[in-house]
Length: 126
Image (cartoon, rainbow, N blue to C red; front, top):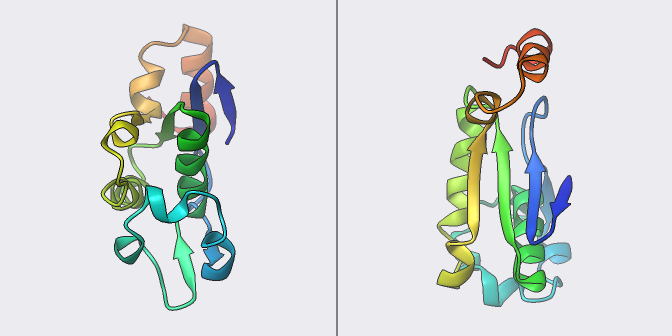
């Protein structure tokens, strides 16, 4: 998690290409894992769960009774698809409705001009 603002947990992605992966043995020991996810439908390989950062943050939101938002670059469709692949597997409806996605492009529209210029120059986000 990159940031916590009161009851909102935030994960941001600007330059990273994915949400990492983790060995199944590790993640299955996490508290509430089987209560939160439909495990068989999660993105995975034979030995790893994909989108580890998303899974970990969703579990944190559940444990802390918080909302969670991932901020993505709209040009990175693979990250958006990864988000929805995880979201589909969340069991508790209360938690699912507390999970959000926001693009940097949407956020940039609301930022002061200096920050918009920075995002445009450094990352091409307009």
